[in-house]
Length: 218
Image (tube, rainbow, N blue to C red; front, side, top):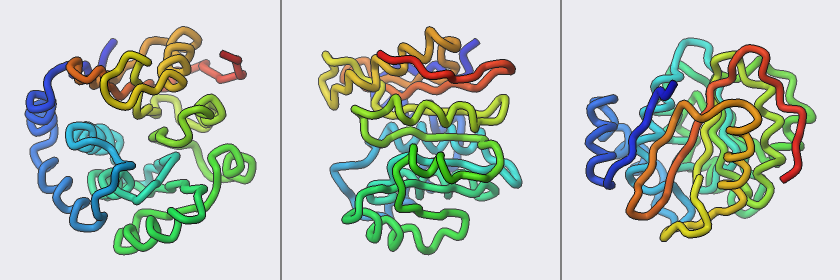
């Protein structure tokens, strides 16, 4: 059963998020004040959706993971929307890591780690996760899938750039194919936010009891 199924124009999507999370506009402005604009960041409507989803996962002691920090904008959105949670955000690129760390330094619930997701998984000894946001290397998104097994039952994994090859903006056939594979292997996504004009979307899955990722090749 769908938890979120927002398919609309950009303005309508933003209006939907404001109804779901009345403080979302203020959070987006606060994140923008911390992190300067970059071409490598979520779009405005995606920022609003991400805030709403992070807020739904917020609870005392919750642990979040972001794969792909870039400049830190999405991490700031998540951390500000879920102040009771702790966020680990992974940025493997040496040139981006110090900027992300600087931009996020004022947020006490964020830890920036200079690791690729699969390398960090090898050394991760922490508890099961409440929320994972996947926005790393698109061509290697399948290597992020083993984090599914580190989700709590009921925990959420959200994929950015669930965009087909025919998408007008940011076509991401690797993410499109991988998410479709996960949907067939596990179950259809409970979270879908999509702008049909650009064919850009975000898709999310809650882990259900008994679901284990064993690894499948495209």
